[in-house]
Image (spheres, rainbow, N blue to C red):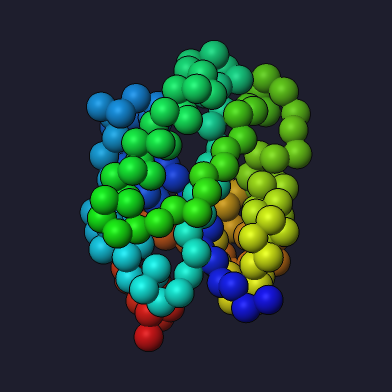
Length: 163
């Protein structure tokens, strides 16, 4: 089981959320600087890429699961056009103010399921996130966490993975 993976938080890591906290429309989508280049580098190093995101705006009624799925389909297509394959995007639709769940980060259920489904090696896998809850989820899933500053180019944080 030597398959290695990068789990990526969506908002603040891939998608710039400095202007919109909840991003669910394509016209709100603005990638963080360097995302395409960085994901291509990670792919070229043999990492499988996954996106794991909390989307609490769904349970708050701000937008629907279908809205998020449509945005993710467009994101995936855009990445594919850049030669980047996202294996799967998973998200938690719950918000703790509305309902309890076991899938919202810092819980690791979504990551655990991906590890099992794709038979990934946790020892050589990483979660790149911009929050403490991302780091807690990484630890709970048995992968290494890499905490970046929100909406910043991740290259300085991941350059050691590429060597």
